[in-house]
Image 1 (cartoon, rainbow, N blue to C red):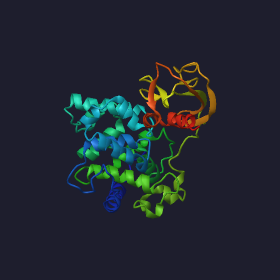
Image 2: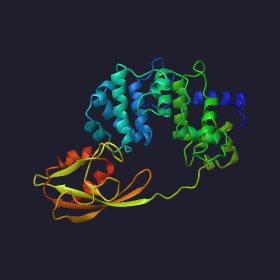
Image 3: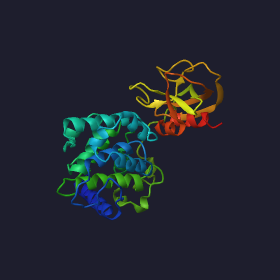
Image 4: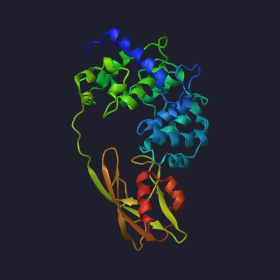
Amino acid sequence: MSPPDSDRLAAIRNALAHWYSLHARALPWRMPPGSAERADPYRVWLSEVMLQQTTVPHATPYFHAFTTRWPTVGALAAAPDEAVMGAWAGLGYYARARNLLACARAVARDHGGVFPDSEDGLRALPGLGAYTAAAVAAIAFGRRAVVVDGNVERVMARLFTVETPLPKARPELRVLADALTPEPKDFDPGDWAQALMDLGSRICRPRSPLCGECPLAGDCQARASGTPEAWPKKLAKVSKPRREGVVWVLVDGAGRVGLVKRPDKGLLGGMLGLPTSGWDAGEGEGPPVVADWRDVGTVRHVFTHFELELTVMRAEGEAADLIWREVAEARQALPTVFRKALDRGVAE
């Protein structure tokens, strides 16, 4: 791959800088473009972790709830695991919530409650991958960093019509993003990173890109081809495997529901859940107690690597080894798949 022409790179940078100065999104974790004040590293880090697998509209209420309840990294570090896991419910990918706590506690314990101000220092924190470390370094500390998420990959693939399919193309796309990333003296690193993110999420969309509104349309090889949606190239999708299991909704005489704490490692690790069996390694093979169980329907949920269908069984009874919660309290604490099952189990 030959390096992009320097004049073309300069034209792209200038066009994107001008567009971002006019069209930057106002988000609760951001500073306005050109601001002399840097964004709070805690808020940048928290937002980036939340946004890794969801959208800005979905993540924003969670961000407000977290920063109201735990306004500093020290406050989050001191929070009970169960409280944070419950507050995370609905954002999915619960390993991120465990990593969130591990990172907050490392910052509080090892760094006096202050985030390291370099990309390498941030990478050394537990649960902080290359993308998040680069984003925090650029946005919160003004460091030149190559910030590449799915939106940036799509922009690079279309600007330069990269024919290698994802995920194999990622090293090539990173090289292009590095070549395009300006020096801090020419463009604030945080503004640059967020400009590319905004362009990818709002204009250079996966489907129906808004090429007529794109500040880089004149420099985009994919647009010139007439079929911009053909990039980035992707390998054919493989159907997700399907699993089946049973979820047990046990309600006592006071109307409370019996829960379990899942093992710290594995899927939904450390979360409260309903007893289940038959669908995952380590799950039980039968109901948590002998009772008059009855089938009240099924729920379906899609995880990253498989689809799950759970038969919901309900009974009235008690069991000393379960964790008992009011239904409303349980609903707040449970991850989405178990919340679906609970709603089905108590719908009668």
